[in-house]
Length: 303
Ligand SMILES: Nc1ncnc2c1ncn2[C@@H]1O[C@H](COP(=O)(O)OP(=O)(O)OP(=O)(O)O)[C@@H](O)[C@H]1O
Image 1: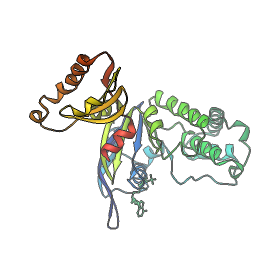
Image 2: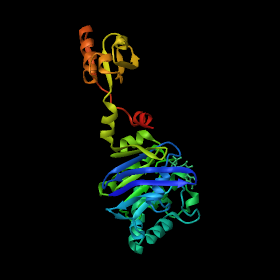
Image 3: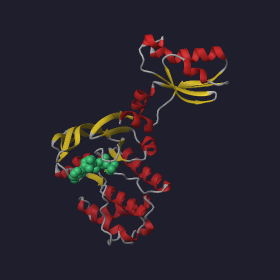
Image 4: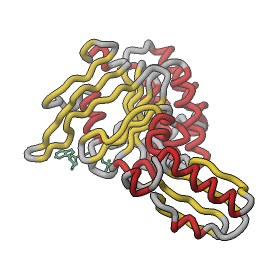
């Protein structure tokens, strides 16, 4: 388990990270999301020891992260750093050697990864001759070649076509299934939503929300409901303690407002039921239930 605790980091006057705490648990994919400049890369660099924190700690298995421990981490940096003129397979094998693999293990892992990432036919091409997407795949192979104990990936999906995305998803899921904690940043919220087990949402250098994906959904999702009736559902607008979010003829999405129970006439736990009862008195109800918020909606609410 990787634990980030109360980490802060300044750049001159700028407080880029302020009291950042979260865990990256074994066998779980943790999505790290936030607007541009919110502190994702800085956090990753602190975890990797590239930047020193000005406060707080990063621990691995409860102990400080030493150079030896760090060598067992896999990192895909934001600034892609492969040598343009070196052949793909040679380079990945070389990086495996740098991380302590013997020559045969480095070659074996390289071959396996190039195959998994559909790059085997490009193994003997210089990196600079690969398309950007294929360079990105090579970069992922470079982060994985030494079978790391922890994976930290800065935007691993940017620039990949949909098939390559699925390919990389499969490779990362496989690592997570073997017990490796995986932290990855991405601006593709639908992808993060589909892929992650846990989430960390960062805004302005502080953690705005974190935890299991489902529990975040529950936390932010209890106030919105969808009702489908036969006729126009516009009458919902006039009900106390309710705010209409979307109306599409017989389908309406509404929220319970923050108003006091007395203003609404009912406690919030009953207000959704009062809409349902009202609808049933008016005619048939085709469906009714809470609406699960998307990650994009949660994101907008917390940042
Ligand atoms: N070396 C540096 N010197 C000065 N300021 C920096 C440095 N690195 C980062 N910053 C600032 O720290 C803040 C956080 O940047 P960071 O790169 O961590 O954000 P990010 O969430 O990774 O953004 P993006 O999604 O755009 O990659 C920004 O305001 C950035 O300008």
